[in-house]
Image 1: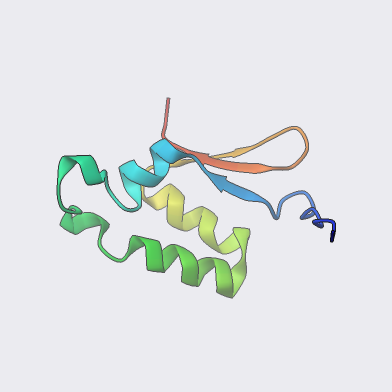
Image 2 (image 1 turned 90 degrees about the horizontal axis):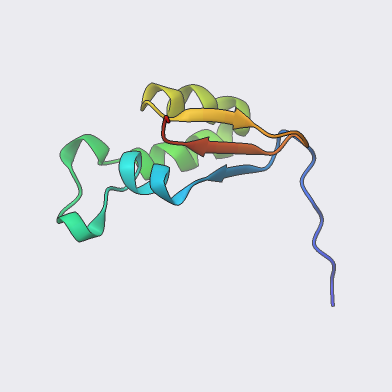
Length: 81
């Protein structure tokens, strides 16, 4: 079985479930995706492909999400407290 290679610090970005539904795709339990969220999932993908974490940070922060760097360099995108 092949062993997974870990991404180096600063390259692993995790978007929490709360942030994903609140500001990227919308909550499917609340009905159709709000107009303001249309295209965000694709914008996020393009930013990651073109520039990695450095490119997605200003994007998610412009949506009101919080960029947190953990003690080992892992990055978490979350809703503000």
